[in-house]
Length: 317
Image (tube, rainbow, N blue to C red; front, side, top):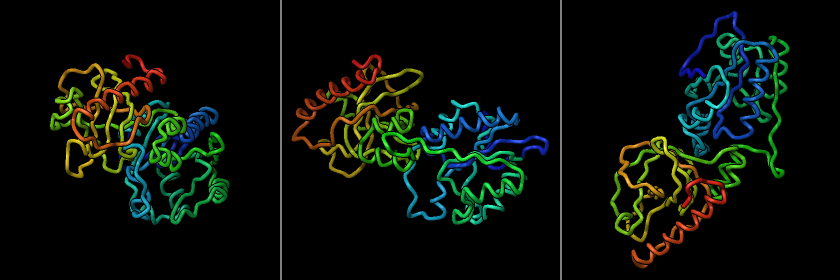
């Protein structure tokens, strides 16, 4: 998979199958679209598949006050897209210039003239161009006029609900971790770097790694304690994580992320980590003293192990 940032020009003799979208979360609905792209490339004997996505959510430009938190940062999204046999992932900043293009200009100037598109594959709720004027019917008409095919992929429906990034965000905000994972087709996760903390966890026998996420727009669930799995330096760990303000040990309003990894004894400051949510344990609480907090953390650890073992995680002990 070739990753191209900015602009891409495909030689005129080469045709491509193109899909366009934010692909936030790369959920099972997105996967169905991408699989259709790859299948269409094979069936139409076209030489190139192109996924055209954006560094920022279009709403950050068109309606900033409505821009949602993101499910995947760009590196996280690219790591998920690596699973597919795509030829090119084209990444562009969504700009006021792009937002102002009508759908006919976008099709002609970008999709046809630049990407040499011969077939377009999009989801059931896709609209193209300024003010979302390029409806599915209009895209189909343009396809007939300009000689490219259009495939509209229907939604993936689970338990009567169409899978969407919006629905998954709602699950995360409501701490429905397992339901979110079902819609995503993978664990909800985040990438971070380990930073130095205050060492309080070590003093109460629960050493933690303090984490700094890569993008403040990344959606995290509400404050509380969660069972997690982590990938660190090629190793996998079970653990539990607290998101919140640690009111028992701190008096300020800083929101921090601290993860306790089972079986980890070395210092890991500065290392990269990927943390997967496995389940919700409890909301954040304030305890009268550190001893009561320690006792609760023992119970949290047992709860985390139960959740992880139920999920089939190895070494959750």
